[in-house]
Image 1: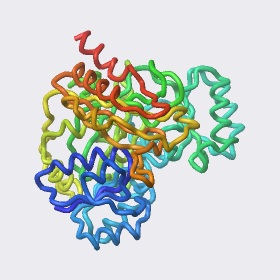
Image 2: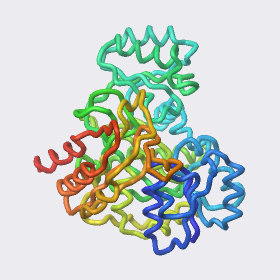
Image 3: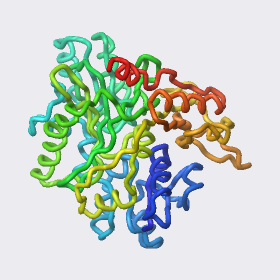
Image 4: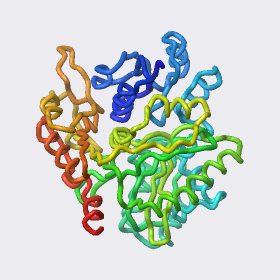
Length: 430
């Protein structure tokens, strides 16, 4: 089959790598892609959010299936445009993608469907004074979120009331996230350990990928501002067999049933960002696509033919066969630009990627990279590249990933050195 991947980041390079290894895929196209995807398929210079141009690409290149990587084109309705024209696509409808596009919608949906999540209250930006009064009446820590898409950076865990007011002001007064801050969700702080669980669904049936754990904060120990993700690993031992059964029964199945009952069946990838609390798993957030950097660790652990599996989702014919997981573990370490996630410079030469990939079990995923006019590979974003290690155990996967990290250099290289430590502690406790 002929596959088109939409997007240009690390997740899309990870997807391209998975599809390039699929026996059922004969040709691969990526729009707009990056230097990493260019080595695996044909690059098409079209923005992922340009629905009419994407539709033309599908016709021109006889695409059999389109896989939409990032959230913005899904929220913009690109999947609807393709599906309505009779094309196979992996990605939910615009109406269903509100689960990610609007935290206010998602929280209200969970409340209607009795899906466990943190207690919350929603305010409009125009009603900021009421939000401030509500904050003053709540215990701390507390969580303040911009409702719309903010690249993973619009959620603030506030240890003090002053921090909460500062977060609210950043969203409402400073418009730090633009229109994403037109609504604000204020949530109770949940204690526990986070994990990510992904379901591939045709709107009715679903299968699960290997549970993983992301590392959102810029600093080691989970300190500092949130980022798009500084690393991940899979499998995540915090999601035990019993917990996974509970997640399916109390979260995934009610979500799919609720979306269908409300007239927008969810077809694509459902990302459940979860907190393992003393009261059981609760939803932190839903996303409508693979996580980034979680995709980098869950995709290498799929033993099935990825092309065939995703086509079953796209065609609404998921046969219910469980995803076969490869033995072992995968770990991903993100290399970021100095100053990320706030102010950072780009355009610095990157060296050592080839050397990193000489380490057994290591491959490098491009995220924020570009080619300069002279062909030099340079930094072009906050999260520059991801070093992925795959091995028989998590400990060995991390060891390999960090050996790869040491080989890569660019000015301002920023790395968390504690990726996967919670997973190792779980294994030690067992």
